Image (cartoon, rainbow, N blue to C red; front, top):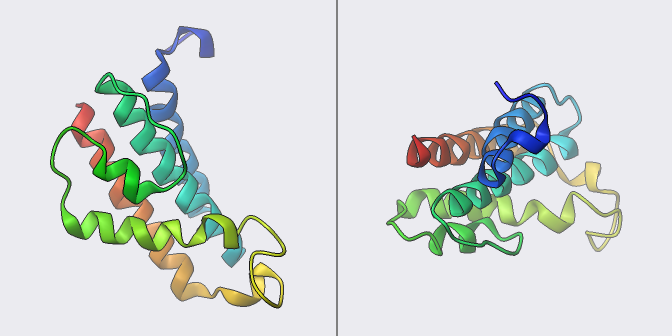
Length: 130
């Protein structure tokens, strides 16, 4: 749709990249990667929504980003974002846990939760812009 990245409005860069990030999440085979990318996709989507609403958004805490939106956000969605927020540091850094590497702390269950919750947040953001 756009000729190059410079043609995309700033809010669009986040909104358009969050589904791409989310789609890459669906292809993850490593548990830690799924959690990492899930949090990242949700964060990008909500930051894009802020920009679309004419607001600046800073930080990486998705729950806070959701609460700072000008319109009401379902409490369950905020709770799901809190799960993703717990993954921000722990899945990015090898010393994010007291012991062991990040991949030792996650399983298919957490990966599926991250995928599902991130998808709900991305879809919420897209529905608010449409």
